[in-house]
Image (tube, rainbow, N blue to C red; front, side, top):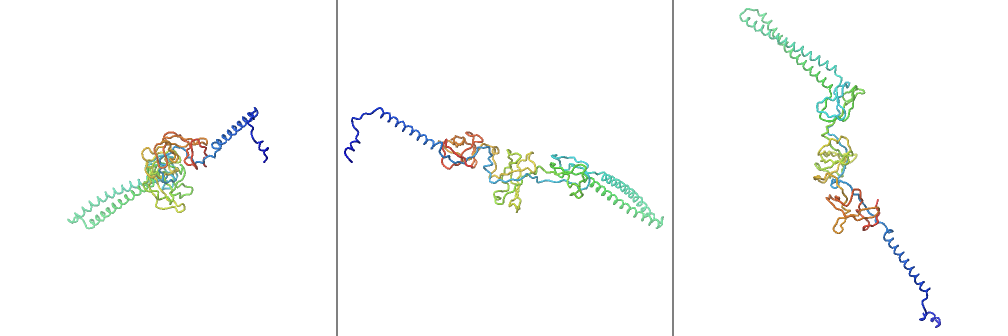
Length: 406
């Protein structure tokens, strides 16, 4: 390179800063400041607002029961009366009076209905009259026997003294024997008449339909004026008048799958929930495991009895049974505000959770109470319906942006 060219690159010591040069330097500094600010904003946006949300699993804080944490198996079924009857008549006839209606409580022997029975009453009256006649005939036969006996004894005494003929004695003896036979026949006639009266009474009694046990009338199958017959033998006849059940025999019958049967034991505690009363819980006990399986469903029928029956429990109600690992203690039959223990974190010696609020994780300090397996009671810090994080794909911090997995 030539010497004169190199000399051009040197800064002359006597060169002075001009006003334009200073303006150009300030502009450069300003541009650099703005660029730096823009980069800082972009970094903040990237690390904050524009950062990819953390995917999380959440659970809802809700009112629950301790039995939920103690449940080892659930099954569904129906409330069934173990003592139930379709009450019918042993006689065929027209229903004259019906004394009950649905929901009526009856005692054993109470009259439920009455068939037309005027003919049966007439038959009974006739049998009673015949009985009176035969009893009168028996009295007459007894009197005749007494007279024949006296006459025979008298003739026998006179025969020894020769005062009467042998023919007279034989006649007295024959009359005596005839009177004895007449008395025996009269007694048999009385017994026959008494039996006829009993038959007539039974026939009349069968025209009254009685309650076979204490219970409640569930349904009416016939109305006054309709013909009822045993097993509906007659054309257009009703086979039963009412259906009744012993309400003290109510149990829940559920189907337990064969694969889960080992979890169910006789006498094991259970909790019953009726679909009609979802907020009520009824304690129960496994009463029976029916010793046969349903081949078509691969299930075994299991009966659970109520430890204490409630009047609002009705037959054929849908029910769900939770088989428990242990009996419930006092106070464990009341609902509490609960959440999964998996949501609890320890921060500075305090129990905390990450609550979800509009896509942001908020660190909350909570006070916990009783614990059942994987469930904890929430005493303060959260309310029913709040969502808490129980699992995340990466660490979550306070105010982290999150995305709830479906």
